[in-house]
Image 1 (cartoon, helix red, strand yellow):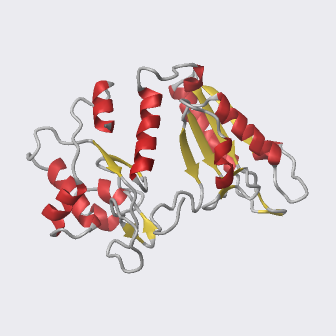
Image 2: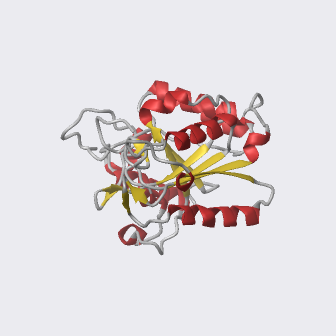
Amino acid sequence: RLAEHKKATGKFLNPVVIDIEDVYREFSGGNHDPGAIRNFLMYVHNSNNWSIAPDYVLLFGGGHYDYKGYDTDEINYITTAQIDFKCIEDFFSCINAGEYVMMNDSVAPDLFLGRIPHGSILEAKDVVDKIIDTEGPDADYGAWRNRLLLVSDDDMAGNEKDFIQHFKSNESVEEIVKLERPSLEVRKVMLFEYEWNEIYQKPEASSALFNEINNGVSCVNYFGHGSENAWADEAILVKDKICNFHNSKRYPIINSFSCSVGRFDEPDRTC
């Protein structure tokens, strides 16, 4: 359904859907091995086996590190690659010889690769519905698509300074995007500008964040501290408050440059 939508909108002329079980059967003897996915992508990208080699790859499904099922029976839709105890998706997209053992800052991916880490068929349907709502003929093509929201943590951890100037990173982002797109409307939530309450949280900053997203922004860029459940020590965004977003058909791309965010690869946990 997603492939048909992308073709109908003209974004991709000939999307191809591959069953992951076919990849495992052909490249790892049926075993759920992340190397099988990488070898398949290398096979179709670096040879003449396909008339048009792919440039873009979507891994459609969540996964986890326990792909042999030692400690969990949770479904592993598309297994992850783990390097130094971290989920590294670049393992799949750096496919030239030797790159998978280097994996350092000098390696540029050979494919544009992303993942929709749904954990069920219902979640998958919801994600595809939102993509179609955003890109389809009935989408909202209003001014919100020209807005970028920059969210920057302060340099405090509780009442202690950590001296990390997160806002500097967002300032660099603003400078770059404004060069490429001067008409872009940049909105900001900078935690420096808000007061603590008695428990060292900043509820007014949280309200500002929700208001900006509910009003509509095409992209949210966050730099700061984080965890599996919250942005910033001041908890400006927590999982339990996600239901307070009311931005139907105005779904932004959200970049979380933080720690411990989106750990979908841990079995029996949600992120």
